[in-house]
View 1 (tube, rainbow, N blue to C red):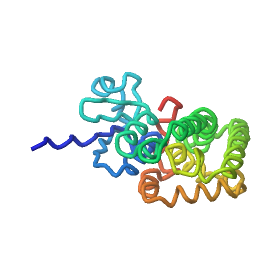
View 2: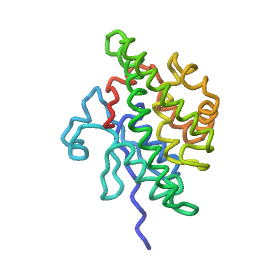
View 3: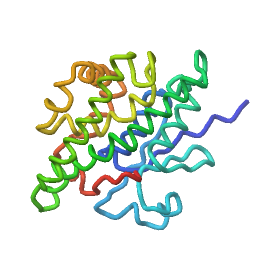
Length: 234
């Protein structure tokens, strides 16, 4: 009899939009996993046992048998490559061209959408929790940057149903958790609701069962949400 596969373990605090990105991939994959809770306030990410998993003292970290991974997008890719390759443009019905377009729009999310979105979330939610006033200049600058990115998304979604083509992919799922935070700010209407295709795309993502489950882990504005402020490396 074959030995049952070990349950994957995900280390981190689920309230982080980066940990929850990995959680979303696990939920979409429909696999069993264990979320190993950690506390940023207690400094769990700086303990020797966690530094052995990730020398950069960050979360999330995934253990899949003997394989240990960090970086949320790398974790998401691994989980989906193993269990839902169609969400990477591969597998049945996939092609090199589909996979390439998924990669393109994942890079857009990582380098164009995420930096201004993270900056807005830090100022809107982390700053008050850390006892300082919001830097409105930073917010305004990054709202404008994010607006321009979402206008590109609006144009792209006029060409195809989803970002990588007429199929759902990780390129659509990866922005969900940080955009969930953006939607809790006063800028949601100007950034998303003003763009009909982006708005419909967002509503479709938010209605997915996996997204609904993961959203429960991110009570935006709750004490401690961003006491470990997000950084791009997560």
